[in-house]
Image 1: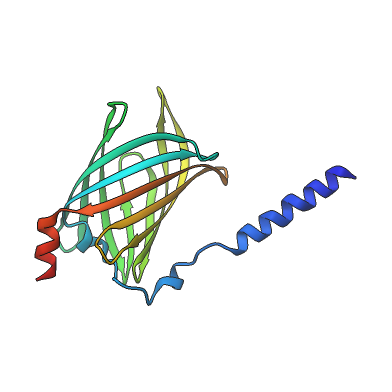
Image 2: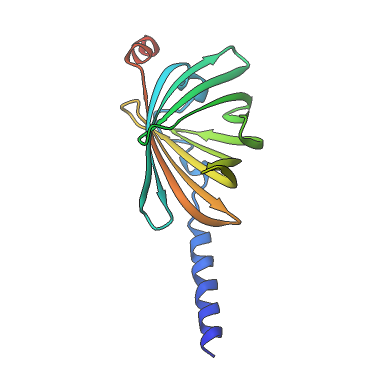
Length: 185
């Protein structure tokens, strides 16, 4: 009898959690509008943390990003520096495929990343082989980015494996001051 109650409780909790998922269309009228290829054109810095599923801080890092937009594709050259001294490099190639719709590829991303922007928000989803010690772990990222009126872009990514949350990445993207001034003209 106890197992039955436990199962019903877990099922109920799962249904409640499933009903609260954000939808990108909820942000269609929010400002300022996030246009990915405009925001990431030029130099952008990011400051991030990774927390495990229990909320324990596991890593801190910075990212130097150089972005170029040629009218068809956005190339993001990302240089990671972790607080323990480790470094990493990733290059994203992102294409705009429709009104606020994007697809992208990177060396450690499995298949294609897909994103939709509405208003000040972007939802970006992809699978990746995440470095873990001397090996890798295939995980799913569900990123939500929100452009603030100050120009800071906040990103909260849920990292999961088999649908189970294993951690959260939180990032703040800050555009180079020169980029901010040139985009205001």
